[in-house]
Length: 519
Image (cartoon, rainbow, N blue to C red; front, side, top):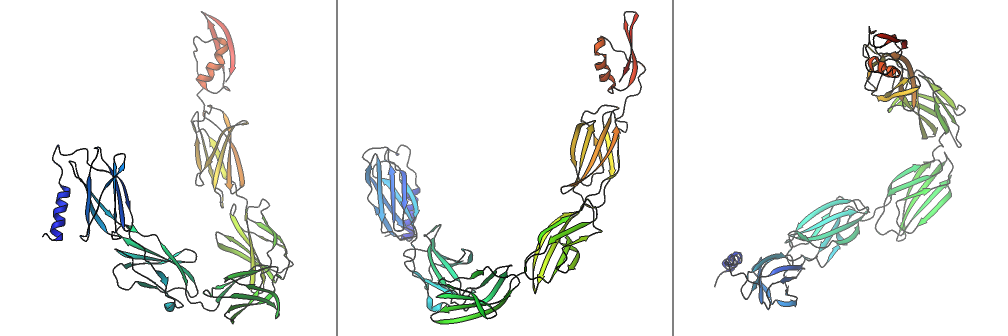
């Protein structure tokens, strides 16, 4: 009798042997459907021939034989279901026609099965750890994949456990006391995995601590490290000079609460009490509400290149003093400390065109409230602006010296009298620009504006310039041109209609006319 290894090798060799020419017949199987489950495989195939008979046999990767009796399912189709298979296991199957025809070899892997039990071991749960345990899945499993998420569904840890170990458990450590977690378990075999199993758990709760306070002018927002696990309720009490002014009870665990309708700049005492199973643990904090921010804060430049004026209205509530800070790109340039009666100030010796941040800080006790606005000094104009043809008939060269201070770009406008010929934006480092290919006329005077742009502010400088012109002509001969079209012809030839010269019109050998023309 052959061993399994030799028998399986012989079976594989037979399965890979091709039928000789002429042996393939209409009963060759054509696989049309494959359904794989954890412990069964359903196959369906078609055949061109009629009244075909097939056998379906195979072995698992461990050498266990399997098979089923195919049966017709109608319309030339056949099917067979293999049952009682081992989950997560490879099976090598062969559909073979009993008459002539080619056999079909198929390899399939059954789906792995999930563990029948998955739970948290509460006896091993501590302040910083959670232990999970499960029963092994039926069949084959290569590994178990465990993922720990926090209560916000953020992945915290992930681990893979070999599928053949004797103890199916894992401990997640370095966790936060009293936090809630969601653990997902998935059994993996080959490239297949089971649906996720979810369980929830919490580390051992601890008393409320790490109280964090955020205040506004009329609110106090308190948050703390959660005392999760089994908590009956929290009781929060806000006291003014030992007299309760607000008290709330919360049946479900919470980690924050906001008290509203309070007095700006007032000093309160806050108690956070955790209640569970008749016991209490209290934490205390002294809290002051923030002062109100200034009203109608405004920064203006009054068309000044180097100064900004700041104005505001005094807010309600308690206030010790103001700090008015001028900064640029996060760098503080000047701070002025002013008493509450003052509601305006100014900053000078600033840079033209620069955007500044002005922060008005109201201070009461150890707390402050900021309000920030921006203001920009007026940009400086360019200097030494010049424009000229430079010998070019249809071009203008424009140059200038850059302004002092900050600016973002230039805008160049070219005017032919009141008609805008060119409107273009230039980079900040440009100091010269050649205007061409815009249909300039030789010898004509144009107006040029250079506008310095800084934010939404602009400073304009203007000049005029004339394109180059032709040398004065000695004589121009125009043939076959009607007298009425001479004006058009001379502009084509000379370009500038403002040049004055005489045109003699000759008819035959006689002088027909003499015209003074202004080109």
